[in-house]
Length: 149
Image (cartoon, rainbow, N blue to C red; front, side, top):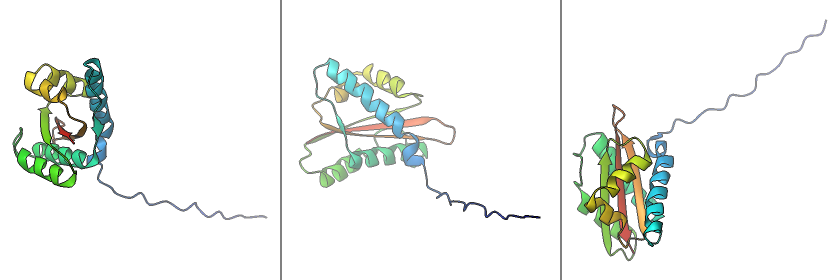
């Protein structure tokens, strides 16, 4: 009688990593896509995503979602100063925030219906950062930061 023993394949440990920063990365890319489509129609150059600005935008969205700060532009001067310190040649910074939209298209469409938000989207900015976070009820908070360098 022949017997065989098989050794089970080793199980790879799956690292536990917070997905907060990456959960909405695809949606942030879509926000940029819709903003740049609009800018192209207006004859404006496309914005380029910047990781430093993404981190600032994400942190602000997370802070709003967790209620560490109220919804709005609280702390904007600090974000602007940190961006200006980290990226050489920054001459101007702007910001759009939103809450409650459920898609990239919806948030961009809402911003475009608002003169103040549309002004940022149409600005002479070159780089941008986008951060999206959800609160415990699943409501999304969006931050888009614009900068000229």
